[in-house]
Length: 638
Image 1 (spheres, rainbow, N blue to C red):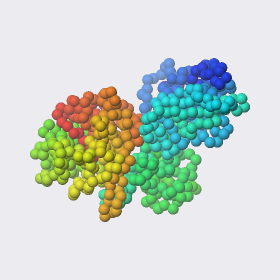
Image 2 (cartoon, rainbow, N blue to C red):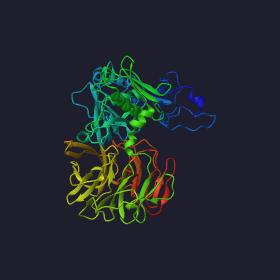
Image 3 (cartoon, helix red, strand yellow):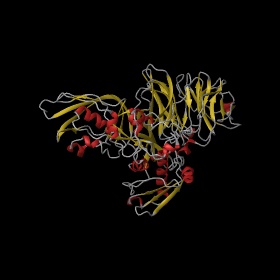
Image 4 (cartoon, rainbow, N blue to C red):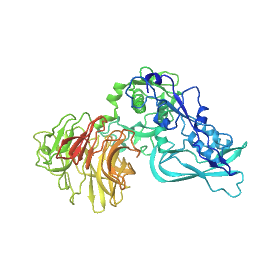
């Protein structure tokens, strides 16, 4: 769009009925209405679109002159857009199926209170319908059809909705993949001679395209809770964990993200994270926005007044990174928390927030890329280097041939598994150090997975057994392995693991009957401080559409890069969120025959992969480039 056109105002677009003929209970067909006729009724003094397809394209009209300018594709700070979608009020004489269809259209509008949608409801339903209780996401929009009519219901009419469900979003905004048939009924009666909906399911039902247009994935941030290990020096109190939720992108998004933060962690993370906000703390402001200096002032209820300076700063850190994730395109300069009278409680600047609390801290600072060369040595290279060099220490000599490796996040130590998959070694990455004996030896060939380090300095690995697999942890990469219970695993086999930097979440490739899936588990720390007991609870699928996952790696606070294929499909590489939803980042360029992939939790770093062409690298905004024709097992520290 040209700059002059962009200043002319926002385009308001109304969703009209689809125009299909509808047979009502009287058997009369409702004549299709021209689409333009209803849209002209919703002018509201702004420019209109001539074609419904342009609603999703985001373009109000095509300028005939003016300079060609680059389009900013970054998310807008306030979720604003040139196009707004509004519902159309009920038309007189509309029959039941069209009433339901237009009601569903109205629920996809950019209205905060669904004012238009409620006009389709009978008075009784207006009082009881709870639109935010749950959102059912279907592959496509549900299809309203004439349903089976109830005997004796002479004054009512039933319409059925059907489709293929792919996910749900609960009242706490948490997304859960859930593939199953969707079938619901809606009942209508006549009020004042017009059909209105009097019985319907609570919540919303949306097609995927509408869901992706209306909702945005946002990370809320809470502090990791290490419970029985919280007194250990490695378990710092400033580790923030991303908790992804879906919020409406155009309805006061900053306020919505802060309210969601104050609601507390989602059910899945509630056991392993804590919020510094006192219980029942609420916003004392009606609406929030960044000021001209990109600072955010937040008034809180009386519950927040009694906090000390340190707790207040930690509250501000949670809020800073949550709102920053919502705004994305604009850096927040500072966050000030205030009481309900506007008195300052504390201020946290951008520099202090990023220095003291940035979630990337646990992922380590700028790090090298690593892989095993043709001689099974561990080699390293920087993002811009074209040739790798052997690391210092025994893993860089070739005297201990390795098949897999993990470099600690401080890059001072590495762990490697021997080429036969039986022995685990740990060695310092410095000259003059001899390799010690194996830390762990498996009784079977190929019995050990690749190891993985968390941000607490602990080393994790899985071992195949006669009855499945067992998960092990070695504190700081030393001492005897401790078994970690995985109640949801059963007899299934662990093929690979990847620990998140926070030590709270673990990604696991699970093999079951020839099918390999990616599961996410949370690490709970029970027992006592003297004898902590760890377990991985509530395994949940991350990429349920993939039935053969080859590799995965953490690629951000709530994102993984996953390599796999759908049933009957070809291999693909894509980003997935930890809640199982597809990431909103652009699709990745194709690369053939990937066996392993590595990403940094710093999202600005390139991807590296083991593919048909050797070790390849994907810098930001570029294509895959071959780094080495011979090499395996690429990794970043972690």
